[in-house]
Image (cartoon, rainbow, N blue to C red; front, side):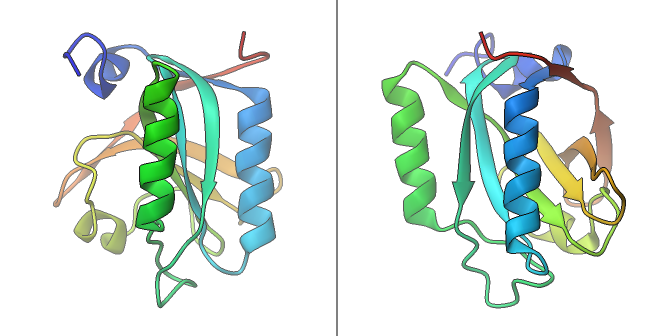
Length: 149
């Protein structure tokens, strides 16, 4: 993946997330609550055009998420076959704000890949995007779009 095509390119332009994918993320988060859930958004930077709800296999699913590694590989393979890539990882905070937790920072296995956190504390749910490192986080802009075309 070249710098012009990867997530770093999306860092300079806000992710464009279709309303249908936002609604799918929210539905997945609500369906799995009170457990955290997780998934991937893919496409061609900065436009999201693929959504993958992934199984959370974390032993402490009420406060952590860990995507099933087989499901991650399958999603990445599907994206690659379509000429797309992973653009962001999302997960829910059923009982916490849409800001990264200490656990999110400590268990950051995806480097600077954008993270989307969906908080179910309010209605409608709050959705925010972040770039994480082990000690801090930075909010990233994103744009809701009406279609994925």
